[in-house]
Amino acid sequence: MDIAIRFSDLTLGYDRHPAVHHLDGEVESGALLAVCGPNGAGKSTLLKGIAGTLAPLAGSIALPRLKSHDIAYLPQAADIDKNFPINVFDVVAMGLWKRCGLFGGISRSETAKIRAAIAAVGLDGFEARAVATLSGGQLQRMLFARLLVQDAAVILLDEPFTAIDSKTVADLISVVSAWHEEHRTVLAVLHDLDLVREYFPQTLLLAREEIAKGKTDAVLTSENLLKARSMIEAFDRQAQACARAA
Amino acid sequence: MPLHDLLIAPFTEFAFMRRALAGSIALAIAGPPLGVFLILRRMALTGDAMAHAILPGAALGYLTAGLSLGPMTIGGLAAGLVVAVGSGVVARTTILREDASLAAFYLISLALGVTIVSLRGSNIDLLHVLFGSVLALDDATLILLAAIASATLAALAALYRPLVLETVDASFLASVSKSGGPVQIIFLALVVLNLVGGFHALGTLLAVGMMMLPAASARLITQDMTAMIGIAAAQGILAGYAGLIVSFHAGLPSGPLIILMAGLLYLLALVFGPAGGLLRRFKRGRHLEG
Image 1 (cartoon, helix red, strand yellow):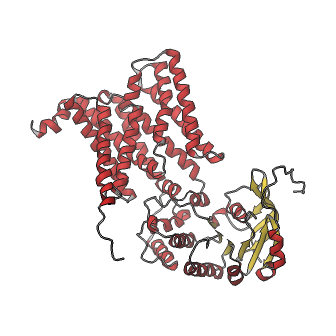
Image 2 (tube, chains in turn purple, red):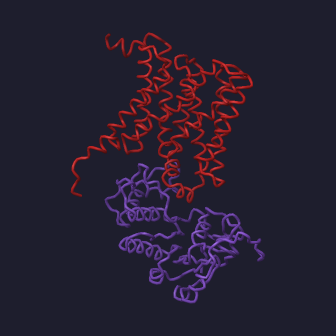
Image 3 (cartoon, one colour):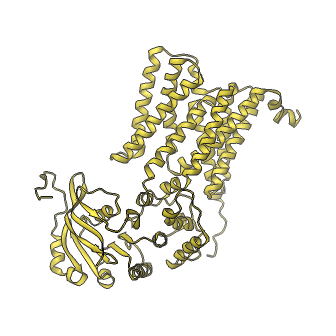
């Protein structure tokens, strides 16, 4: 089985305090992996590390066979400036950045691709709408359309379904399932365990350190969840340097 | 008085008026488009801070070489770039946001400048630095203004996409490209370049006005980014022309009048602007069916 992402004794964190601590393991190519765990467990931090926006404190993240631009990353609560005068089509077209860069034009087939992506997330007819007029759910649909246009091998979603109505969640889940069928690697940070059990074959349960990883049913046991919940959330201000061998 | 005498004759009769008009048009073509981005990036006061930052450098150039174009331009550019790059780097590498790091740098720069000026005592000619002399533009200054305008437009065209991306969704740009940092710094460098150009014509303080007022006004007139840039530049040109005409006939200083005209256009847009002016807010008509 191909490996998409490999963690080797990975420690990620802020100001020397680890948020993800000594993580080892692999994510197979084409995996649909949910990342679960209590607040402060390091889930978002792990995605930032994979996306390359946060450098590891120790250890490494390897992407054999992939380049960093094969990764599409949707951060938690994307910080889109809704006051900027830009329409839905143009935001979705941003997904073409890697092919177009500074000056590249958008070809007719790419225009069709953008329109198809907008239609696929149920925003048909919204192309010319200003971003400022979108609701929260519509905004998230638009960002999924941009991910579709990015056409990446690895897709990282950080709490993509928070504060979104159930119809939108259902529509966007079907987009995620389609990615899985296309053998893309998808990692999603999720809190809704029922959703995870229904749609995500694999789960990584994280509480700064790995609690369990593997088939979702085997990971999300009450015993494992209890173990994850017992994690101490606050950083220890008097913490000594970590003595575990790197 | 015939319309020709009122509106055109000042420029056909006096070379200094023609030069002043050419200089203001150069300033108006490049400055307001930068202002549009400053406003959309919520950095409207950055222009003001930058104007304070370049003043000491220009003053230093003046004190070492007198009232000559080269040293004052280079001094102003150097001081402005140090502040722009320094605050950009600090904002990206420390916990301080851009506004705080910029404030820190420009205050240091300003204090340093005042100290330098006090070494040689103040001078009346420094008024030229503060308030410019749009009616006394020589060839070298005009060429400098035109070169700055051309370079700014070319750079803006090249940076347009990443600049829009960085403004709309900085974390997305960061996830697909490493250009966010350099783009921001080049953008601030362009702002500095235009303020340095502007201070020869309008003075450091008024140069900001030429950049920001037409931009703020254009934001009230349209929701379309491309149109906004065009309208901002057009208003800058109009303000330059109208300011020169009024100052010529009324015998008032031209720099401040150009900015006052830009201010007048802004006030009109504030009331009548179709994209968020006051009238539109209070006169909405009945709500629609769907």
